[in-house]
Amino acid sequence: MRQNAALTISSLLLVVLFTVHLAHDIVFGLDSMSRAGTFTFLLIVLVSLYGAVELAGRRSGYVITLLLGILSAGLPVLHTVGGPRSAAHGFFFVWTLLAIGTAGVFSAVLSARELWRSARTRRATPSRAGQA
Figure 1 (cartoon, helix red, strand yellow):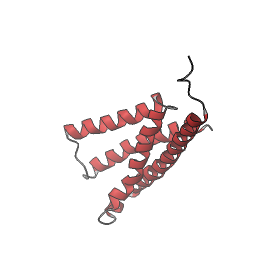
Figure 2 (spheres, helix red, strand yellow):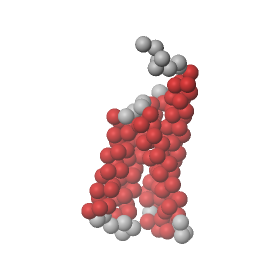
Figure 3 (cartoon, one colour):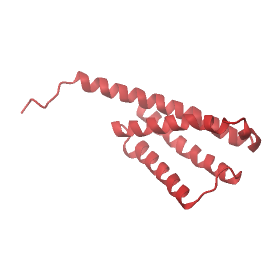
Figure 4 (tube, helix red, strand yellow):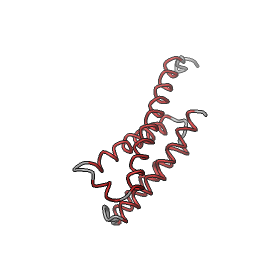
């Protein structure tokens, strides 16, 4: 499987898991959706989808998916600060947190690898600025 396809799939999986996770937060009373919270959520999902689908294979898409992956990898850590309260909310809630963290690290690694590869390719090809 091509790396770009794997990165797109893992980024889309992150979006799905993130929406399921937020639904869990609301159902368990860990978060209440205000208008500002709803707008923020929609903005994050929109930027994530745009970066994963429309900007796939471009540097800006890699940067967006890298940031999404890093933030997603930190989500399980944020939920375990102050003790394992998340475990009281059920198996599926904890599983979703672990899946988000794992998919986040995977997406971040693939994005960083593609950014590194594109930077090396740019250095290897001569600049056309001096040619007219």
